[in-house]
Amino acid sequence: MDIHGEPITLSRFQGNPLVVKFWERICPSCRDEIPELSALQREYKGRGLTVLGIALEEDPVRVREFLIAYEAHYPVVLGREQGIGLMKMFGNEGALLPYTLIIDREGEVVLRKVGAFKKSDFQEVAEKLLR
Image (tube, rainbow, N blue to C red; front, side, top):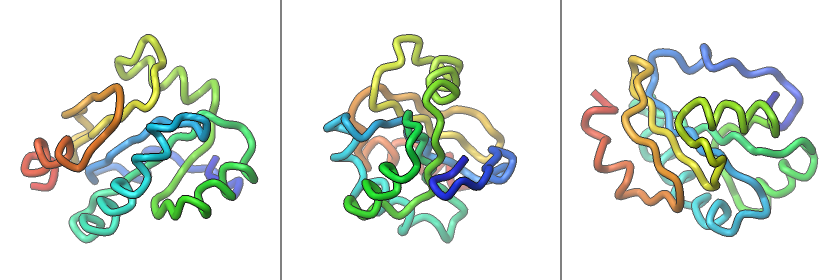
């Protein structure tokens, strides 16, 4: 579910590159990444890129208020247990945060990163990702 209670499926993003960010409000590094993620969304949206946040939270009101306060401009879904399971399925067995996946148009993971995500991480794979 997104922060407005609407269901979102990953098939909605099929064929487009994704930056998937797993995060929580209490994670300082997660908060620090929001401006760079919002900038990526703005800069590359026209080339099909979507930044998708997966908040490991359950309260949509608190998450929505947080996203407004931090001026996050990308879609976010909620899912504590489902998000943790998904994160583990994609290689983060310790469920450490923040965790970023970059997925290409074919659905292949081209980058996995535990820890702070920077635009330079994206630029390393951008050419392959945005073809």
